[in-house]
Amino acid sequence: MSSIAPETPSRKAGPREWLGLAVLALPTLLISLDQSVLYLALPHLAEDLRPTGTQTLWIMDIYGFLIAGFLITMGALGDRIGRRRLLMIGATAVGITSVAAAYSTSAEALIVTRALLGVAAATLMPSTLALIGNMFHDPYERGRAIAVWAGCFMGGTALGPAIGGVMLEFFWWGSVFLLGVPVMAVLLIVAPLVLPEYKNAEAGRIDLFSVVLSLASILSIIYGLKELARYGFASAPVAAIGVGIAIGVLFVSRQGKLAEPLLDLKLFRVGAFTAALLILMVSMLATGGGYLFISGFLQMVEGLSPMEAGLWMVPSAIASIIAAQLAPVLAKRHALGTVIGVGLLIGTIGYLMLVFVDPVGGLPLLMAAFVIIFIGVGTFGALGTTLVVGSVPPERGGSAAALSSICGDLGNALGVATLGSLGAAVYRDSLDLPADATPGAADAAKASMENAVTAARDLPAEPSENLLAAAAQAYTNGLNVIGVACAVITATSAALALAMLRKSRGATPSDGGTPERDAKSETAENSLSTT
Image (cartoon, rainbow, N blue to C red; front, side, top):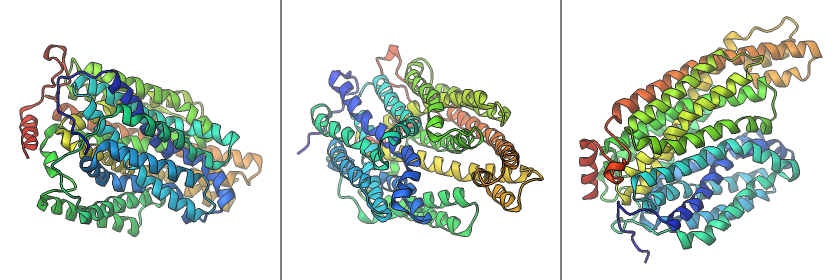
């Protein structure tokens, strides 16, 4: 039977723990790479597999859908069977399904393997984050470790297009899936040597009906949000969201009646935990919508290739990583709410800079704004996640980590849907079509900037330039408005942090690394520990 790691809050981490952190960073980096790298491979695999439009959408979306849908289940499963064991099972499954995806011979096969890859990847995020909580007992060291974890995730997202572009330059489209194979092989070899095992010895069986409810609720909501973002307002995605919320209410009601719930609702009695999740969801709403329009500006207004756009995003990734590493240092001397709030206010400044971006010569200002935005993202990515993991008892670590990931996913999807719709509306309303645009090109341009770029390729030189200039100006108008909306959202997140986390502190030199918490959170944690 797996051993249960003792809770020793004052023990400092040694070389084994820091080496274990390096091992845990590998799957984190891989997941973020997998979520962004496929966009580059899509044209290449489309030529080979000939998917229909619907199949293409499922190839793109099914991986993220199933990661989000299974996070709660996998977090609870790791608490029960052992987090290292689940991590190794998931790593094996990721390696096998990655090879299967790389050598898929049909669109249907790729959809199935991407789905299985998503289920397997769902084991990695809560397992890695919960194990960090088990390995690093000192609050300051835990904060530094989670900062590294968060930096790997954010860095992988930005580096995905660049790495994918290089691989596709020399290899076939399936090579992007094989990135995970050597990573998982290293994890399987080293993990048993450096990672501890931890599980909740008192946890009972998983309620399968709760698994079905959680999966149906999350998948319905995220599917509806993505469809709204893709096609605008329609009855079907709105109904999907409504069904998902209704199932979610049923799920929550069932958890309150179970002796061994899939999701322990008592976690939400911890004030700092609940506040961190709320701020995470709100701040990710702005990040998702802003990232959508900024990446679109690079490729459609500036005319950069996906790989070139990915390289331009590297400075923002570096800024977020640096901010994530500095955040725990600042949290030693200042309240967490202050550090997070100030970081988000810095991000607010970056979003306001988007208001002044022009379609001609606007790239330097856009990139400067993007770097400033990601300073705020990196600060909260490190400290918010630390707060979520550190606010709950060790036996609830897997569930807490899963909730952190789900809130981020929901916030991102909601931001893409709502802010994407807002930006599209501004684009359509402000589009001033040139007189020499053909009726077909005009209709295409009115639909979206993407369609305007496609239509311009079939026009003579001067009408093409005029159409692209008009569409670029309208798209930039949408970006300017999105900047205002994201600034308001991020400022709201900052206000929430300053108000709700004002008494939460990081480890300080004088107290030997013991975090100071507000009385309400301390009482809630004590009640959880004795449950």
